[in-house]
Length: 323
Image (cartoon, rainbow, N blue to C red; front, side, top):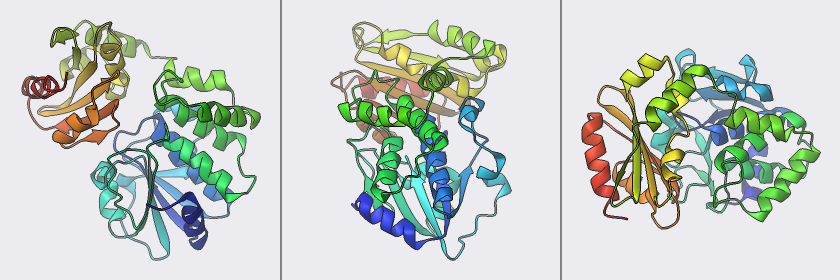
């Protein structure tokens, strides 16, 4: 694996960049992508974030503009000479979704913190000790030795860190994170605004969906496993969007006596997204990997192309082997 010093030196060689994140991007992914994009802009580089869908409106507070990104549907996937591709927060190249084809044709820098990342780029920096890729972007900017950490970049980085630490509630929260957050606050971020955007300010339809999902919670393995489901019927009847189901798995994990929380989200017929969260002993990234996914030891996920009832049965059978 490379070092941040090598990453900075490689970035200095290029003038044009395409930035890619993982499918269904979360706060760490979105925050990291735009923090890096704006840092590159400050370095007088040309960069573009490519996304499958428009960023969730809750991230609009840190200043994303239409010129900052483009959708894959509107972009011709052409490997441009003289352009470097940077992948962020994607544990493997498959996680880049529509961006995989482009990444395979270009010089690729892979920056990540997933422990199971195989190092699929020409240059790789993977640090599992970092709670969020946003933390790595902060370190990269500091490694550059410039004073380019403005309020907008700092807010995007703070969003990334706060998202992947659960507002500093998860085990990945280190003393170093609080030092970083202190520096980000000195750069002018509004910590209350970031927390409110990430963890509250919900639509009415979101709360209705959560009610449906939480009422579906069941226990297994003598109370060591809790799981819930969000099917297409619930989405349609509440008027909620798929993004509104984000974070529900934590409620299953947070039940007293539960070791592993699982959510089953029906993306469409026979395609189910499975999210795992564990408390102490269960390495859920191994379970996710068994089904073709990945992630962290305490937070992971996968997508399985089967009926949601079949998926529940298969996944529960596997998780029971671990608890």
